[in-house]
Amino acid sequence: MLPANTSVFGCDDTTFHQDLGSKADFWDKRLRPYLEKEKGWVAEDMQFFSNMMEFVPVSLSDPSTLRALDARIRQSSEGRAKDHRVFYLALPSFLFASAVEAIKLNCWSQTGACRVIVEKPFGKNGAEAKELSDKLSRHLSEPETFRIDHYLAKTLVLNLLTLRFANRELGSLFHQYHIANVRITFKETIGVVGRAGYFDSYGIIRDIMQNHLMQVLALVAMEAPASLGAEDVRDEKVKVLKQIRPIDPANCVIGQYDGYQDDPDIKRINDEKGHPSRCPTFAVAVLYLDNERWSGVPFILKAGKALETPFTIVRLQFKKAPPNSLFGEQPQNELVIRIQPNEAIYYKMLAKLPGLTQSAKDVKQTVLDLDLKKRFELRRTPEAYEKHGGGSTT
Image 1 (cartoon, rainbow, N blue to C red):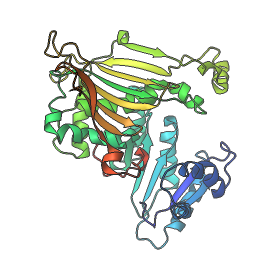
Image 2: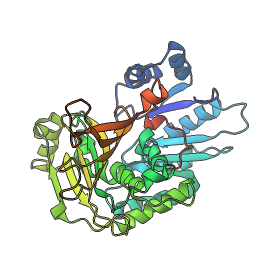
Image 3: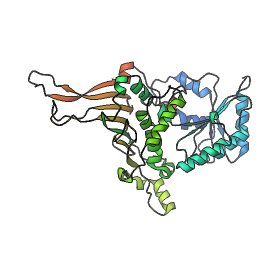
Image 4: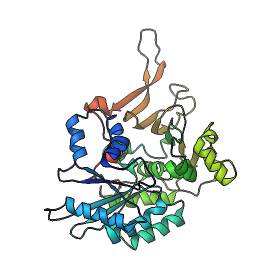
């Protein structure tokens, strides 16, 4: 999907990653093994992408390497009227400000537009996030700054606004009159797998809950925006965040999976700290919104690593029928949005059991579902990082 005149420059500090010394190293060790896992690729696609790739060693502490990158980009853009550049900072957040300053001084386009993309976690707390924003704003205008959460580009997350506001009969169910609780659950089977240094300093709450899951919560709970424009959607999401009641520690549980302390990198970190890591790898928090729509409805956020099965699911559980209702004691109905894997929306509802011997009260919970791959005959759904900027949930 990339325009043919796009150039992609992979940059890394080779003193930090000594196995990278050339484009061949970058392609074979960082890209190709993962690209080949994708379904549906053909050799021509791989070659097309490889041809637009380059590798340039860069050290943020050495301005000459950034000037060399600038020269290489200018060489690549010769003959073009504009030299537009997008810098994606795959860096720890504490390096964002110094990286932007170095790029602005040594590698900024003189003829085209520049954009800088930073991803979560954006600092460790509100004060750090504000300080980081202030530092970035010294060098970048707001239209030049893109703070992204790739979860917003997941197919079923993009579908949340459609589900609620394009289907009015379903949207009316998103209300405390009908909903008993909302559960947003993220599970991974992997542990820290080589990311111990990063993960142990942030933990599952900062890594997953306060960004990915809170974004999903905001989309589930928000009122209809004035339009599908990014700023109108953002404004409604901000209202939701402001209405969340301060979280009671009594409504939270944290934990750590067995074997976390045995990871060699965690052992090294423990030795440096002088005590066992207290980093949470599992957390549950119950949130309440103080507004008319969601009054009294618990939003249960759950995230964990090294669990039994990988998935991200939003589950809206409807209220139980009153005692002595027509069909007696029955399971609660649920609307389920499976964000990953195998994206789907399905409704768990009651249906009468078929058969000559079944009575009128013989009912069982069954599923009314939308399976995206079956319904739309998709070869594959795009990963969130692939999604273009045309979405409105940024």
